[in-house]
Image (cartoon, each protein chain N blue to C red):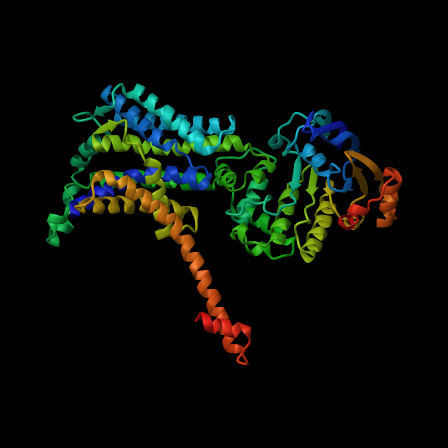
Amino acid sequence: MVSSLYGALESGLIYAIMALGVYLSFRILNFPDLTVDGSFVTGGAVASVMIVGGHHPIMATILGAFAGVIAGCLTGLIHTKGKINPLLAGILMMIALYSINLRIMGQPNIPLMGENTLFNQISTWWNEVALDSFLLAPFNWLGISDYAPRSFYVIIAMILIVLLVKKMLDFFLRTEVGMTLRATGDNQAMVKSFSANTDRYVIVGIGLSNGLVALSGALVAQYNGFADINIGVGMIVIGLASVIIGEVIFGKQTIVRLTLAVILGAIVYRVIYSLALRLNFLDASDMKLITAIIVICALVIPNWLDQSQAKRQFKKSQKLNGAVNKEGDVHLATAKKDS
Amino acid sequence: MLQLKKIHKTFYPNTPDERRALNDVSNSLAPGDFVTIIGSNGAGKSTLLNILAGTLPPDDGEVWIDGKNVTSFPEEKRAKLIGRVFQNPLIGTAPNMTIEENMMISLGRTRRRSLLRRLTKKVRDEFQTELETLEIGLENRLTTKVGLLSGGERQALSLLMATFTEPKILLLDEHTAALDPSKEALVIELTKHLVEKQKLTTVMVTHQMEQAIQLGNRLWMMDEGKVIFEADEETKENLTVNDLLNEFEKVRGKKLASDRHLLV
């Protein structure tokens, strides 16, 4: 039970980078980008092929991310220059990437067992500095060493990587170019009237978004120990679920707060996922359905709450009016009937 | 400063819906000129403004701004020379961004946008000073999201954002039409003040004759894609609404009756 929560935390941190990418396209650029399902696999595919080919895992990961940037830019180009609706542009790119990913991989599945992955590398460094014994000390001291993870290296390394990505994204979104990118998603006509080429901003933005998604894909492949052609199916919905859970639970006041919320949302999603898998009547394959239901609920329930709250407030004010006009008129009569 | 050379524009050519929006329009403005354009619906006022801004390409003719032929410039390139305020207060500003961020974007109109965080204390102070000139208290709300402002406040902000980087040409597209009367008076007052302060060459389209007479030093009346009446600085000083209505009748040989309520 507890160890599965550490697993959820680890993969939550890795998928958080994907969620940040989805946040960039879906929320900042207001562009529901389905390329994600394909570019996530592209990242994993490129990284795995390079690792198997004997390249350094850091190099492989970075190039995997870069492949995602290219895929995203192509979606942006199809949308802006080809004037194709965002959803369709994303679907077209996703389908095209399925074939491209198979070409890159050469086979539907590339095992990375025994290869020099990023996480193996980190694990080696980690064991050299022997920090685990230090971090495990409090668990031993409290007598709950059974609940301690085997090693902290994935968690610590991923926290550092995710925070670095978050910091860079926070910085970028508050630069002049970043602000214009945000305004492009908010009000294109306005941005054009202030002399910015909105097409270029959309292309760059979707490129960056898919770069993050592919980086996450490259890390997931190395974490799982294999790259698979089908691992990206439904990734966009998982990303959306993470973004929405994060926004609802952790708030969305400022950019800095929002990116943190998205990261935490991704972790919460993984925790829900691992808990749901422990229920006997659920299979792993049911998770896509559950994810879809989470997203639908997260999108619909806030609207319902707003509406019913407005109704309650209206009734309340009616009652108050009725109490004031004690002489009684039509309003009072109807108010009484209602209550 | 601004020259229009034989501009033609026809919508839906060679179809039953064909409409000549602009028919051989030529005119020019000197630096510092402020022209108001009036005309009934479909006279071609907005089409003319869209062609100036580069939102629509002309079928024929040329637009020259500040000695440059800008006819083939796309909208965003032309925007380096042009400040623009739209009729809809929602178009001029980005609602989910703060006042200071919106102003930052307008600041990028004339130069290359950088990958640096340019919104520094110094820039904020400058924004504050600019906002003070509006006298509606926005200077104390730099970090308020623009979506929370009223239509009048948003339009005042749009106006400031379009003018404070000193564009060669300022385009105002019925920018008070969507506001209630008190806000309208405020925005007109601000327009006057900001244009005079920076001596901006301005083109303003309006539905209201009184506004057209009250503002600016020149006036064009348009009908069926042509400028049918022009008033220069001298004539404009003594112009009344009735003069304009008579002028319209004289030139077109028909009454403006159907549009009269719209124009006054």
